Image (cartoon, rainbow, N blue to C red; front, side):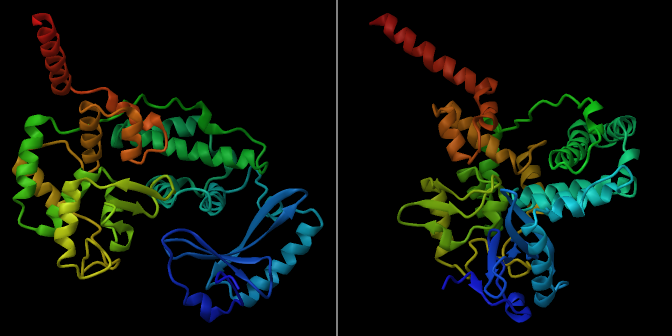
Length: 385
C-alpha cells in the first residue's frame, strides 16, 4: 500500500515528519479525507472531489485543533453537500459589503497556500502583519480607492516607493481573488491607485570592488561565514537555498546540486563550478551534520543569518549599498560580460522567465569598455593583415 495512505489517528498524524515541500496524506477510513503538511509544519485536513464537473477542495480545519474524528465527521457532511452539487467554499465564504477585510485575507491565504511558493506566502503574511492588518477590522465597503491612495502615499513617504507598491498589490490580489472565485460582486478598489514608478535595481561589484571584496572574504577569520559567501557568489543561488544546503542534495562526482525547492516552487539542478567544489571538498572533510552549513545554536540546525558578519565584510572591503542578494546580480552580470547568453544566465540563476534575466543584459561601463577594447583590438589586427 502507498505509504501516504493509512488509517489516520491523532498520534500518527502528530508524529509525521515535517517535509521539505508540501506533502499530502490520505485516510483509508474516509477515502475523501486528506491531510496537508507544509514545510513550516502546518497540518490541515481537506476533502476533495468534483462538484458539477469542477475539481473542488475544501479545507475542514487544522490539526491538532481539529481531531481525526472531527475531521471525518466534517468530511462526510461536506461530501454529502458536494454530491448534491453544492460547493462548500462558495456557500461558506460568499462575501458581502459588510464582510471584514480580515476574513477575505484569511480565506485568500488558506486557499492560495497550496498553489504558491512558501516564500510567496510568507511575504504576503509579512506585508499584511506590518501594515495592512490595521485595515482588517474594516468592512469591504469601507475599503475605498481614496483610502488606499492615501495609504499608498503615506507608505511611499515613510518606507519608499517599492514597498508601498507591494502593499497595494497585495490588496489588489486579494480582491481579484474574491471576484474571480465569484464570492464578491463589488469592484476592486485598488485598481484606482496609480503605482509608483520603480526601476529595477541591479547592483553588482565593479572590477575594483570585486577585487577588494574577494580579498576580504578569503581573509575572513570565520570559516563558516567565508564558505557561505563564497558559495553564494560561485553559485548565484538565493541565500535561503545556500543556508539550507544538505549533503544529500550534492552529487560530488557529477558536480551538481539538486535544490529541492526554489522560489519558483520547483526542484532544479544546477552545475557547480570548480571553485564551489573546492569549498564543498573542504567542508566535507570535517562535516558534522547533514547540513553543509551546520549551526549548533540554530533551531533549524543550519545557519539562518549572517547579517553581522556581512556588515563587517563590507566595511573592511570599503563597499557600500550592497546586499547579499546582489551577489546573484554580480554573477549574472559577469556571465553576460563573459559571453553567456540570456538563456544560460536564466538557467544558472534558476529564473522562471527571461524577463527576470533581461536586466543583466544592460552591462556596466567597465564591462562595456572591456568588450569595446577587445573588439577594437581585433579590428586593428584585421586591418594590419
